[in-house]
Image 1 (cartoon, one colour):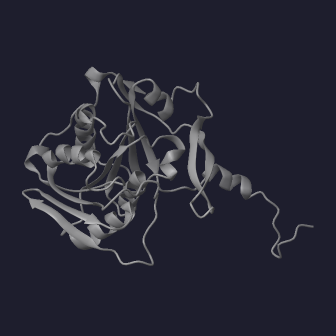
Image 2 (cartoon, rainbow, N blue to C red):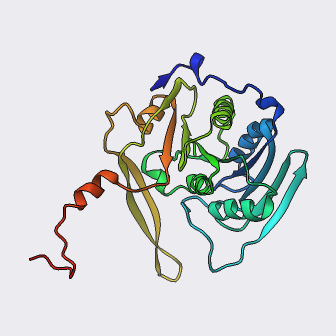
Image 3 (cartoon, rainbow, N blue to C red):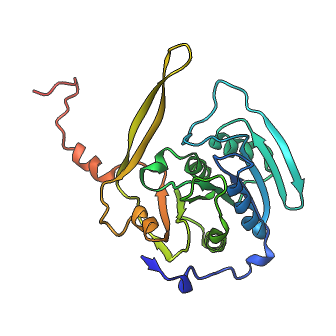
Length: 276
């Protein structure tokens, strides 16, 4: 599905201007990251914003939670329609404590990002940005993760803002289906359109660089590259991003493989665990 810029996403805001929504914002790059500042600038237009974000980078945390250490939260800023907290936990910790302890009401919307770097394809499984969005979905909150294909700390997010505004407008007006969150990835540079697409099939090909510290003890730095297993497929997020389009991918927290269930039902498994 390809949508021209001139037909981007039809706004169905209607009477939304009269309503103040409660919005929870988080990320995995830390509360000082330029990406989260850009995201707050947009969503402040829709109501009251509470930011609960890690005190430093927590990239690659996925759905991790803190179990054996205390969580600490500090209020950083409070002004009209905006309160900012930093937390020493993971992005999912930030969502949990934001909903349970810091906000007076369950938020109408959770947005995570804007991540510095893509979260397309299999990266959604590792992403702290998407881990936070998925946690919001678990709580029954419409949730969106936003990412830009630029890992630089000086990344320019200006070209994403109008698209974020339209996507947020539609989600607030129309809502998302149960157990569904949105994974939205932006290309770098001029945007040629928007596509609603699936995750591409691929894998991070890990490589470890072995080094030695001054005491001659070995340690490793994780490196590697992403390999797309279906580079010719035109209905994937990877293809969209490579061709200058915004990739919108609905994802579900229900990881059941329903077709495989039916196949496994035909297995011959005896009650005592042996087949004869």
